[in-house]
Amino acid sequence: MTKEQMIQENGKKLLLEIRGARLSSVQFVLDYLILGFDEKGALTTLVWPEIIEKGATLTFGMTRYRDSLCALITRIVENVEIASDETMVITFDDGTRLAIPLHSYKEGGERAIFTAPKNRLFVW
Image 1 (cartoon, rainbow, N blue to C red):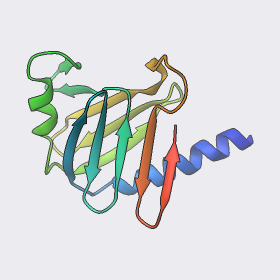
Image 2: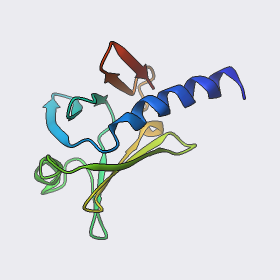
Image 3: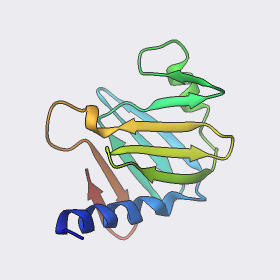
């Protein structure tokens, strides 16, 4: 395993700590989003998630996008995956998924930051 792969694995392990936590907050900040997970941490993302629910996909700017995102508050995270193309997928207990395609961010630099308790963080 390369050093880069080891670093990415550490980030994935840290993010997995939100399993079993509720989505406790959704904060829209100008051009980024902060998702809070109980006392397990917060994910700041400069890439707007796709909301996949009941066979439909909502993307930023679509009608009901913000309402659907906020409706996930109190839902429990069942699983978190990070695909090889750097798409984060957060699956909730009602089957809704948030797909965050970090590879789609064209500006360069940070695309997402996960901050966890005890001053731990990971930057993608």
